[in-house]
Length: 138
Image (cartoon, rainbow, N blue to C red):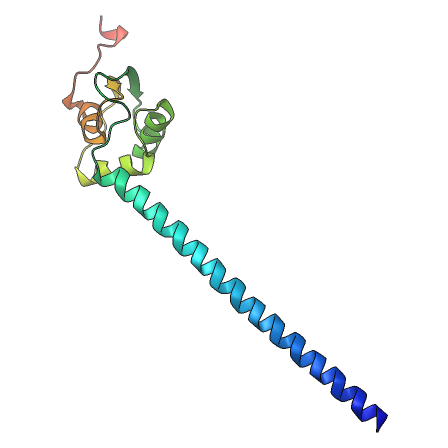
C-alpha cells in the first residue's frame, strides 16, 4: 500500500508541474504575440507616415548638398545615400514613392536640400530639377 501512495503523490506532482508548464507556455506565447503586434503596428505607422506625408528634414531654407546618381544605381542605393546624408527619413519610403510617382533616376550630380520633400527630391533626381554641370562638359 505504501508503494501505491507514493505513486499517487508523484502523479499529482507531475500533473501540477505539467499544468504550470502549459500555462507558462501559453502566457509566453500571448506576450510574444502582443509584442510582435505592437512593434508591427508601430513600424507600419512610421512607414506609412514616411511614405504618405510630405515631411521635410528641416524647415526652409534647408541645407543644400550635392548628390551623385551613378549609372545603374538602384533606387534603394540612392535612397540609402539620401538617408545617410540626412536628406530623407526612409530609404524604403523613397523606393516606394519612386514607383508610386513613376519616376526614373537619371545619372548625374544634383543639388538636393533638407527642406525638400521626397517628391521634390525625386523630381530633382529624375532630371526635372537643375542638374549640376559636370567638370567633363566644360
